[in-house]
Image (cartoon, rainbow, N blue to C red; front, side):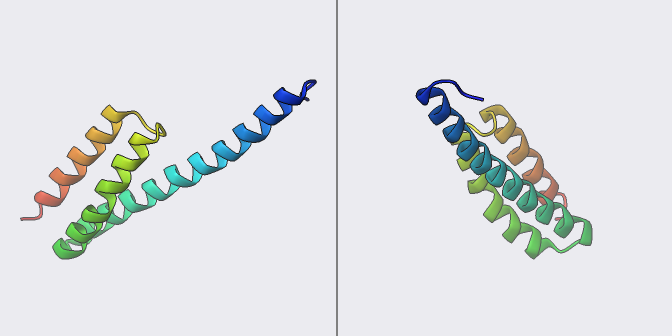
Length: 87
């Protein structure tokens, strides 16, 4: 329990930011899962479309500081490589 007014405000801010970050991270994981499912189904067009949606989202997640930029780069690289393996 916060004893100061500023500490109570900080707790409220942290709760809001935590909820936002959780939502963004969860959405990113869902988009990544859609790419992987399209690849496992062998659907090249759906995989390419899903990849086109997920790359900017991963970049945005990294820019906001929710994930590290190296993690974002690694995810994009691996997903692109996975989709290109369908050729």
